[in-house]
Image (cartoon, rainbow, N blue to C red; front, top):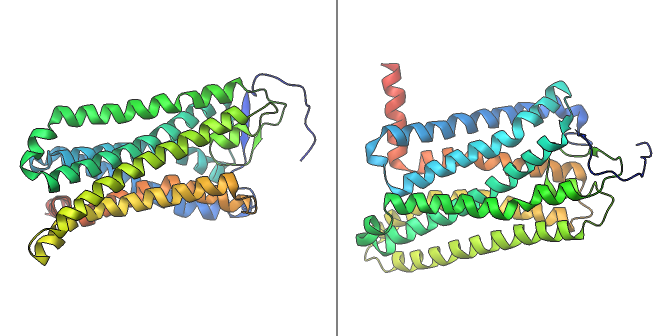
Length: 315
């Protein structure tokens, strides 16, 4: 890489995304699973939205939250995959700096929204299992809408400083970004000024938000498990726990890779760059791909409705 001019300026007009450095020769091959997973994410999440909309018996808080999750997954995957695929297929590496900041906001905002929706879904399961007679009076349509709006506002407010902090930093001519999308920590590291405030704020938001959300989910499921173990028969316990299994699977698919990626980014100095970037892409693509499959298979009402739709089309 050539030497760069060290004259400071406000921000570059464009950034050059390298895709996955070290794996450039494999970009075309990597695009095949990336494109397949993106197609599954689009079809699966749109199917969830369509099924819940068309089936009146699914107009319940659990499925409203599932629709919020599906919409969030669509935004999250679409925020990154089209540009990533354009790099893989057409070597289209340039991205306007303002577009980069916009992409950064959407990625981090809706990643936080998804985390908040998992908390809301855990709350729904807690009320349904621990207070079943009050479920319909506690989680009314109005309350569900307020929870969804609160989740969106919370994430938007805490992520809004990210693009502003990145934009205010001085840059010194290095506009080559070794990544396939505009990730906050990576962009601020291109700056030639003091990035401690930006880095500390980003790390604080990530760890605090995830820790609080996981704590709320853990408390909810502790109470749920206590209620399940008090049920009189094994069949009743298994049936009740089955209503939570899809949520637990989706929760693990979302949080474990995200935490691993965050920790390796901050502390994994010996982790190869191409592994980190590939894993970071998987963190944003795997949950939107697997969530509709998990809920479609594990949720009987959605599975039955999906089979009915395909049967109708064939006849």
